[in-house]
Length: 348
Image (cartoon, rainbow, N blue to C red; front, side):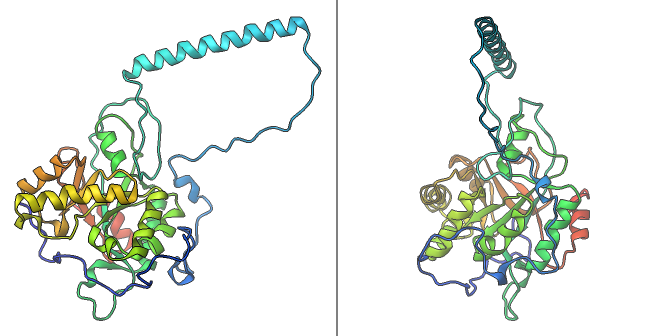
């Protein structure tokens, strides 16, 4: 059994929220963020931020309409012959591609991915991938029970900017597993950016900063937290609509290793069911509450249909352990340069 590090609290603390726990009067835009939650003034958005995206939407610009005289009979014949040749060539090409790729499956980054990319089948990747672990993106109150769970917005903004400048690109965890299966490709320096529990700061602070680079996150949602706050649930729904990946962090954030079989199934499979129903997105990944798991817990996660699970164990995610994926804990005291150095080391 792998236990949480000594400094891992049993669960994230309850903190005062900066919103009313009632349904919003109107559906807010995900990027309509109060000024006090925006990136710090000394943080300049890069003109080339869009280059961080691995794929962009193609804008089709229609040329201005123009009038021409009717083609002659000879020209019409040539156009018909040329059109037939193009159709034949397209059919032959499509058949060749389908045969080459076997089932003709389109590889995508998965729901919530930073980007989606179509790629032909490739050799399964064996790359280890860093998964960053965040909790609250906020200033820690003086009386915070677990100040190590807080990263200030200015620190988070600098960390994201430095990662971008150093060539890192955020990808979804689904895309990582697709690449390990040979169904997708990864950029040279991939990174998964994960957030645990579910706090307003994920929507109000982290999302707008990451959006500057076209990046999305993985939110491991604790259903009890969402169920108690209609406004927070609405915010998480907006994150899902914006392309964030949603994972389960259980129903009530218990120590799963202490539960009987029925309780364990409810926390693991039940949380996936309710999140899928309430958010309308796939929930393919689980995050062990407080990092507590054993072989029985892992078996329950697999049986519930998840593709993988993240831990609080320190290290990089490996294809050899999809249900024991290690992560890199990020603290407020970790400078951007130190963070990148950790990602480039053998043992972060």
